Image (cartoon, rainbow, N blue to C red; front, side, top):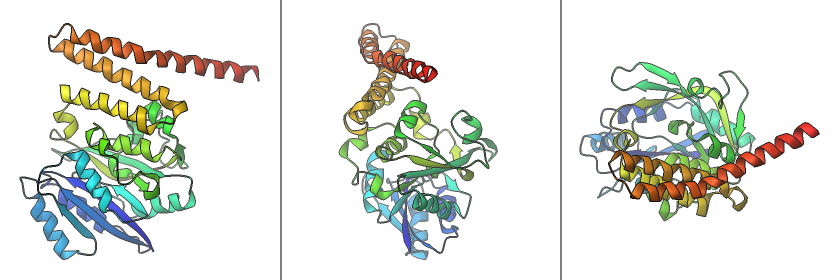
Length: 314
């Protein structure tokens, strides 16, 4: 029997966490042993009470981590990942949920058939948290990246994730545990996008496989971390730190130019933000840093043109 760990971080998800847990308990896969590690980051609502109730009723499946102090999403993820004991680890935040009872089975089968792949992901609905209406699927939002429903599975390399950025629903991610550097490094706590960082870490030595089937729902509401930090100095500082960590620890030496491009984007974004706040001189510094690293964009462009020229000659 294959063991799958579900890594769930939660904070003030009282209205949603029961639905999240039920989606895991409803998985129909007798071939799998499922544990759900739920890290509650000292919620001030009734999230902890709901999780504790499920843990009492389903002690073999629901395993809570009730932190004594607020850790933040990065440290909470590290703690939950460290507690996972499965061959595979599924990501599922406390306000999203799974909709297909075969989700885990299909993803595990895909990874068992492709030992070279470190990660599996799939399509998902996005829905409005206020009225429950479906807004779009990731396949519809990113048709230039993701194949349509009913297509054959498709693989993506680390460089694909670097080029395309964010296009993967967090609740769709299933990692081969061996593909991640566990325990996660200390610097993981400082990144802005933990799910994107995990994608790049997992695909460092092998591709990810995509299943074009909607099997989860991504909740859109105004209390998420991304919305709270939509335009803030902390957001840009975290993204700059994240890009530097990608340079140092995530990309292989021959691919670090992609990290340089990402870092240039963050420096220039921070410069624009500072200008919008009425600052005059500091934006020039970050703009200059952005231009320094942006030289790599030209290098990538020239490399692609050279490859195209060689292809046409052949």
